[in-house]
Amino acid sequence: MPKLTISDIAQRAGVSKTAVSFAFNYPERLSEETLRHILAVAEEAGYSPDPVASNLKTRRTGCIGILVPQPIPIMTRNPHTLAFIEGVGDVCHDMGLSLMLVPPLKGNLRRAIVRAAVDGFLTLGLETFRGTMMVLQQRGVPFVMVDSDPTPDTPCVNIDDEAGAYAAMSYALRMGHRRITIFGIRSGYHGDYRKYAGTLQRRIAGYARALAEVGLSLDDPGIHLLECECDLEGGYEGLQTVLQSRTQPTAIVAMADVIAIGVMRAAREHHMDLPGELSLIGYDDIEASSLTCPALTTIRQPTVAKGRVAAELLIQRIENPDITPEHITLPVDLVERDSFSTRQ
Image (tube, rainbow, N blue to C red; front, side, top):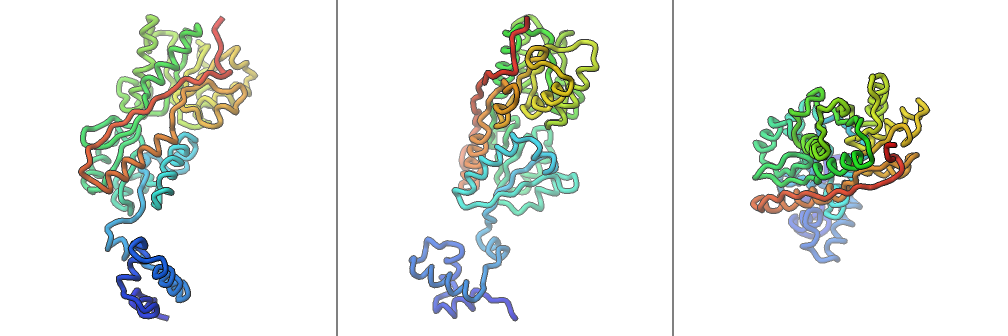
């Protein structure tokens, strides 16, 4: 049986081909009665428009992509990323858009960018992927950078990472701790924080500023940086490593709540008293942070709101490519709970 065409539906409905096209692409241009009639005829005939053909005509896919530097199974281990996607999804739902996650394709982000059928991209933490940014520019689709170093010609959304890290470390120091291990996010630089960029650089700068105010530094004998995978297993394995070292910290300052919760799991296995033996502060304030035992002290960032703001900027950019790029920084807050105590 031959595939039904737009002409077939127009003939059956007694309308023009343009009217049928409007029914599927621009329904607001038709009266409600005409729209219902065309859609009813199409449904009865079993007709659906070819999405590829529609995209060729409108030059739009009706889809935006989130470009992530990790495979999706790894990315979804961090609830913070899922909260960001929730915020983006809220805007897509309101605007009638689809959302595509775009991870590296066989390890290659450039190949993924070229093949993704989207109207624009949100990039997550790609400050070290300068080649990738060039491919985005060459493709010519709008994009908004998230958790990255801002560039003059590109919209960007960040949180105040340095202020959050400063607040976390200042709190630990104010509570009397001087043997502190920072559980950082795996960077590829093997703990050489001087090479950090973007989010990691800003957070290290915040920690360093707080330490300097009490005469300490990141190179002080009591201060250590340990990089971990940004998931539960990363925090779990990180504490195992720390417990094998000669100098035990009295406090851990983690760059992500999911890492801190992994630390808690390992601490329970070792029958450690939290926060009596080891105080712990995280970063993000994911939903699980208030449900742990003890409840996790952390830095709250507005992750869902960050997703919404980034998606709104991207849609504005898609609709008006000449709009002046905005650089937006969202505030953070210290949330005091039960996982941190004064060092006696």
